[in-house]
Image 1: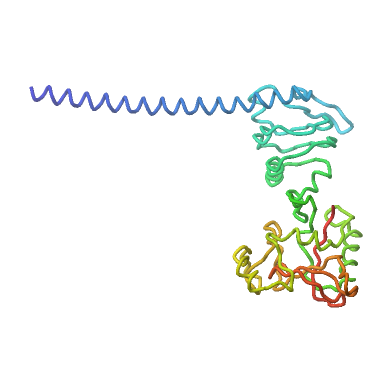
Image 2 (image 1 turned 120 degrees about the vertical axis):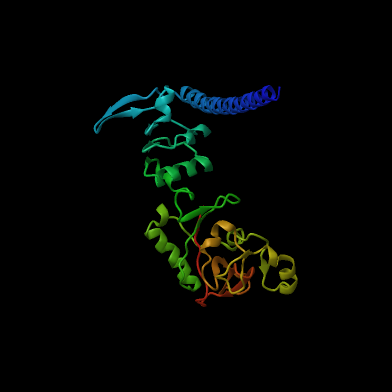
Length: 296
């Protein structure tokens, strides 16, 4: 009797172990099936977008330099292993969000789509492709976006485009104007319409409401000091500028010239010191300020 009970217990344990194993396999298969269904979903949406925009099923285009695939393959395996994506001259205005699933491209051609607008995520996708060695051909107006061109930053609050890395020299007011002209001569970052900003434009870079120099500094500091960003390069250890430009605040003291001249004293111009939040008016002959140029 005891022997039979032992045998039954062993059989029960074996059956329970097999059941658990089968449940684990079933769960894994269901997860894989779910994953495949999700993948199939983005592929179907990508194909639908291609049809809506008259993008061919990967045809061969002949030109002076030979032939090449043009379009998006309607075969799942070919799409998942796609290495060259050529969407040149398709009159595109946008790309589908599913496009960034194509991560092994070695060539991407989006030229001659003058009305194309990329989302931030798509720009990040292109940047990653470039880092992976992908050859990217797109129109210059897209290449000059801040996310691709680290020399400039477009403020989403004002749509102004700002110089990111600035010269560490100090300038007089007249020298600041010449500096902007020099940037245009050099076609800095691909642009030739740089200028010294107005005081209003410069103030828009503050991450908070900056302080006019004759206001009560102690009261302003009490209310706003903790809103500044920590910056070990600053003598005050705080910086009051929008975060995308924080990395360029590398000097111990950095006030910037504006083109705005004092209404009372014409030999004075307005500046902003982003290290203590001061908006002040100083003698234009002082060579004590930096320049951060802007374009509209």
